[in-house]
Length: 219
Ligand SMILES: *Cc1c(COP(=O)(O)O)cnc(C)c1O
Image (cartoon, rainbow, N blue to C red; front, top):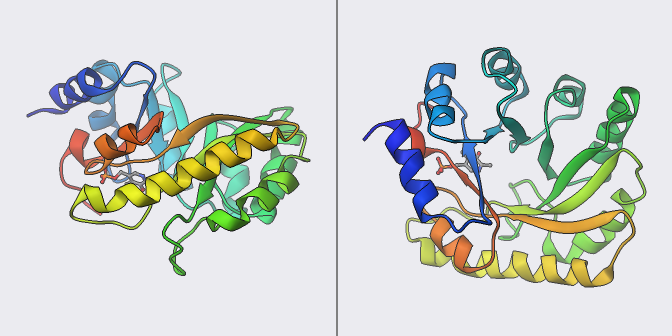
């Protein structure tokens, strides 16, 4: 099946209030354009350099979410064209985003990345530390915290991912109930090609899908 058919099939399956973010790492602009022609509206980028090249080709018909691990020295490169950063996990990176956005007169919507599997080598804040981090980030005036994102450990069986989605949803509800000023808990970004159906059952409203749209990855 082609990219267009894949996108249409996924849209048919998604509830109306769930946003599809196409994870486009390693894909060519031509491949991404095919997905856009099939109705895709949000592109997920993992790498600052790769993203920069693609935005010149793919136009203002789409929005861009940054979904990779963002390094401090790459923030300047991406804040101009990225519409949401889904992977903020430290005050340090938030501080840099705030500073760069202030220079542009822009407020960046962000999600806090939760390390729901508590895996030491992975990005994201541990669930129990999320409240403290968000309270601190909420004080920045050129950032708006709008929810949470998680990867979770990778499994062959998507059922194994469910507990990590449940845990992230629990953090989401807890933070919502705190009613922190300048924080609007609106988005939950969970689930990839093999796990998005489980993530939807557990209340996500953003799914990030690569392989199921574009086929097996090149890297
Ligand atoms: C690559 C990637 C995805 C999508 O993975 P697939 O298994 O190809 O659907 C989702 N989220 C992030 C952060 C990614 O890097």
